[in-house]
Length: 477
Ligand code: MLT
Ligand code: ZN
Image (tube, rainbow, N blue to C red; front, side, top):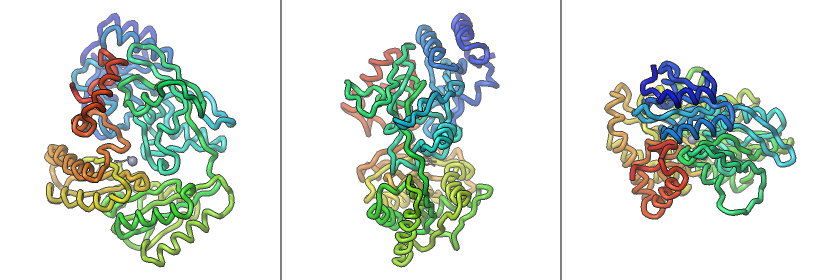
């Protein structure tokens, strides 16, 4: 039996539209949709709806709207901020995009892909790559995260430094609005200056304004040469100096520039099977740098060797390894991409997905580390992230052997301590993970006044009954 049953006429009408396998009500089937990846939120729902296409989705949303049923859009369920988890009332339905999973076309003239929301990012990347193209967005959760989710949350990731966030890749979009009407913005135009950019309003709205059902994604020519290196550096300033050295030579060659602290790297090495540091000895900090070019010559190799050669001579880099094959490249990336998983295995953690101006990063990491160590003795400060974008995942892992619940009980104290330093340095409290339900409480003090008021007016205009992903992004009025 469902925990809070849908009204029978609504249930029957939904089954009529979506088929029996499109409406899950058995708690054994719905449970996984009610818990976030980090297991911070354990919600309940009346049902999980699984439309197979836009028409089914629109009809299901119209019905829920007519019955005043809250709706929680969900893609791959990889939110770091509880953005796709229903509350504990059990009144909402989760609308899962997983069955909307067609790649419709790849256009080689415009370099675009037309794709359903439920296609995983990895599947979309692979489809582009099979045709000699690149979908230039990469995140650690790309095997599960889907196109709808990455657009709804304006995901960033490893290639933002070169190609921008998901927002920059969304040429066209289709979404079902809270009343079930379909907003068709599936144009693939580089230039279209005709009124409010509604697709950009949907991107990053975290499912609070509508449910994204399809998109036109901007692709790029696939790189035909790549060079990837893992470097040991003394500290965050060293990582930034190295970034400046690459940027000065050829900013367009930088495909990724990732920072990893020694603490964070040690967790990966000890907790992830098959991970091992391919350097002589552990270092205080590391950089993973990848250069890429559509040219097939060996100019990237010389660029990488020249810059790293000088950096090693100057002592800016203390050790480095260059990938000599695709499998070595994958191993280097595996070390980076397993950071979130390693921290999950290390116990409870508090994520501060912050950004500050590049020059302020060393001061930020130093001050925030000091403040957090003073707040919770034994805390493991394990920052890493997209340093080329000024985005540091200033993640805090519970003291070894400590009580996870006691640690998490202090999450606001830790988040507020870090946020105060971020604010002083002119940064943002959420660089790429969004607000979800975890960080709504920060909105009034960070985005208050006219900014929050305008957001509330937009929400009220599009979703006057507050049915689409209620409780996310905007704090209660
Ligand atoms: C990543 O870049 O791996 C995720 O955004 C990070 C996180 O765990 O905070
Ligand atoms: Zn990240």
